Length: 107
Image (spheres, helix red, strand yellow):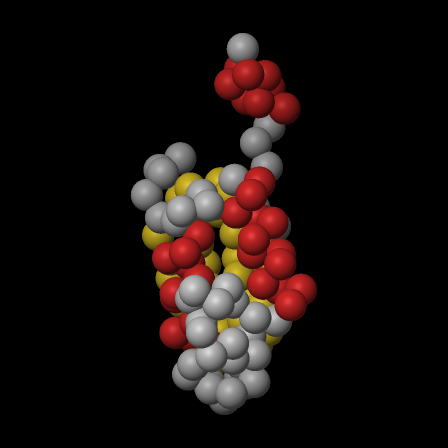
């Protein structure tokens, strides 16, 4: 898998929905780039429902916890959004590495 972060946003303003698709490797550092994209999408329309699709990404545990926190609090981190605009994010699970691959990496 490519470690470069690739983000695609699909927006349906008529139905107040946006899909943010992330590919690559999401770390505690690169998650900030993802937050910035989510913030920009969220600013397009009030009450926009954002779905964050991580199914094609490899996400570090700490970064996933950060994204779940934003989802649970309905706000992005203050350093990204000082205004703390309401942000409804649903996080779709990242891909899982097969058990055999994890053992090879650990060895």
